[in-house]
Amino acid sequence: MNKKVIAGLISLAFHHSISATENINLDEVVVTASRTSQARENVIGDVTVIDRQEIERMGAGSVTDLLRMQPGVQINTNGGAGTESSIYLRGTNDQHVVLLVDGLRINSATSGTTAYQNIPLALIDRIEILRGPASSLYGADAIGGVIQIFTRKNLSEKPLINAAVGMGSYNTKTAEFGINGGFNALKYGLNISSMDTDSFSAKRIRTGEDDDNDGYHNLSASGFLELELKEGHSWGLQYFESKGRNHFDSGYNNYGNQTLQSYAFTSKNQFTDFWHSTFKLGMGVDDSDSHALPNTNPASSTYNPTGVSLFRTEQQQLTWQHDIKLPVGTLTLAYDRLEQDVDAQSNVKTRVKKQRNNDSFLASYLADIDKHSLQLSLREDHNTQFDSYTTGGAGYGYRLTPNWRVTASYGKAFKAPTFNQLYFPNFGDPTLTPEKSDNVEAGVKYTGKNFNAGITIFENKIRNLIANVGPATAGCTLGGFCPINVGKVEILGTTIDGNWSVTDNLVLSGNLTLQSPRDEESDQLLVRRGNRYGTISMTHTWGNLQWGSEMIGSSTRYNDTSNTKAMKGYMLVNFTANYKLSPEWKLEARANNVFDKNYILAYTGNTATAVPYNTAGSNLFVGLRYQMKH
Image 1 (spheres, rainbow, N blue to C red):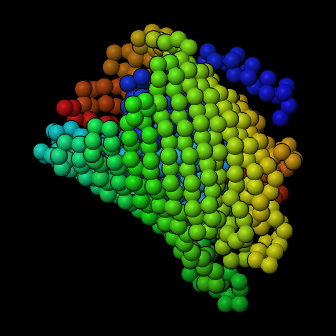
Image 2: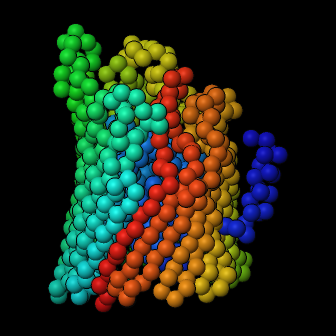
Image 3: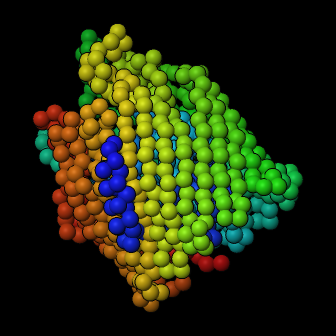
C-alpha cells in the first residue's frame, strides 16, 4: 500500500469525522475487550456496544440487519429471512470473526462460519463488538474481531414480564414472551420467541421449482438460573436454543433445518478481596440437515437416495479464569479447553467424523494509571491438529484532556483450517497450515457533553490465507477449487463513529468505513467487500413519540476474485417510529428500503449463468410491546 493511499484514507477520515456516530454511555461496563469488566471510557480496543434499548429503538428484523448499521461491518445474505448470512468485519473473511453467545462458541466447525440468521433479536439483551485481532484473548479465528451476544437476563427480585407481537410484509408474524425474577437467593429467567414469514424467492430470476417464495420459521428460547450461595459466591446455569427451517432455491423443493444450542454451568467465587475466580463448563452445538434432490444412482460418487445431508458440530468448552487485583492494575490468568467434534455426511459415500482438542493458557494485564491505560496479553494454544501457536497483544491509551484520548495497539492473530478444508472427502488437505495476521492501529476519541466521536486507523496483514483455488491433488479431485495456502492480504482502513445531540430531543449519528481489502499479488479487492460503506441516522423525540430515519450505503463490490462480476453500490433509506401508550405499553413500526432500491449483495456463483440472490424491496413491520415495570 503506497503512502499516497495511506495519506488519502487518513485525510478522508478527519474530513468526515463530524458526521460520525455512536452514543457513548460512560457508565457502561465492557467485558469482551479484555475478558474482564472494564469501564467503557478506559477501553483501548475499538468497541461498539448495542444495548436492549437500542435494539428495540431500531426495530431491526434480524441480527444482520442490526450489525450492518455498525462501524466496520459489511454483510452478505443469500436471499431473505433465514438464508445463509456472512459478516465481514474490517474487510476480513467471514471465517475471521469469533461469535460468542454468553461466552460460548456455537459456530459450525465444518464450514467455519456462524448461522447469524438463526439468532433472534428477541432473546438478546446486549451485543459487544470488538474490532481488531483478539486471538491473544480468545484463540483461533479472531483475525477480524469478536462479536459477543448476551442473552436477556434481569436480576430483579420482583417477577417481571415482557411480551411483544408483530406483523408485516411478506406475511411476517412474530411473537415473544419472557419472565425474569427472583426468590430469596435464586434468580431466574425464561424468554421465548417465534417468527414465521413467507419471505420471497431467494433467487432473483425465478425458473422451474425455484418459482416460489422461500419461507422461514424460527422457534427459540433462552433461560438462566443463578443461585447466590453466600456473598461473593454463586452458581449459574444458562441455556440457549434456536430451531430454524428455511426453504431455498436450487432447482428442487430444497429446505434445511438448523438447531443452534449453548448451555453451561458457571461458578463465580470471590475468594479474597483481590482474587476472583470464574469456572465455566459448557457446550455449543450447530446441528443441521439439508434436503435436496435425491440421487438414486448407486454408481454415482454422490449417491444419496434420500437427498438429505447431515452436519453436526459439538464444541465442549471449559474456562477457568482468575482475576487478581495487584497494587497497580489487574492480572488475569486463564486456562481454556476446546473440544471440537464434527459428524458430517453429504451423501451415502461421503462422511467426515473427526475431532480435535485445544488447550490454551492466557496471561493478561490491565491497568489505568492516572492518564495512562495499558493492556498486555499473551496466549499459548496447543492443538492436536496444528500443534502450537503463540499470540500476543499490546495496547496503550493516554488521556490528553478530560475530553480527548489517544490509543495505539498491536496484535497477532491466527485462524485454524476448518474441518472441511482439512478432511472433507475428495476436497480437504490435512497439510494446510493456520492463517496468520499482524495488526497495528491507532485511534483518537473525543467525548463531550453533546458530541462524541472516534477515529481508528488500522493495518491488518494476513499470511497463508486459505482459498479454494488450488489444483487437483491426490486428496482433492476438484481441480481449480481445492483449498490451498496462498499469498498475502493487506487491509488498510479507517473507521469513524460518533453522535451529536443537537437538542435534548434530536440526535444525529453515523459511521463511515474507508478500507482497501486487497490481495497483495493481484491487487484485487476481496470478494464481496467494498472500499467505502457507512450509515447516517437521525432520532427525534416529541412527547411520547420517537421517530427516526436511517441511510445505509456501500460502494461497488465484486462477487469474484478477478473483480469482473461487479455489484453496484447502493443507498437504502429506512424509517423507524415508536409511541408510548403508557409506561409499560409501546407501539413500534419500521419501514425498510422505502424507495424500493434494487441492489445485490451476492450471486449464486461466478459463472456466466450465475444469477443474483434476491434482496428485500420496500417492506413494513408494526408491533406492540409490553414491559412490566419494577
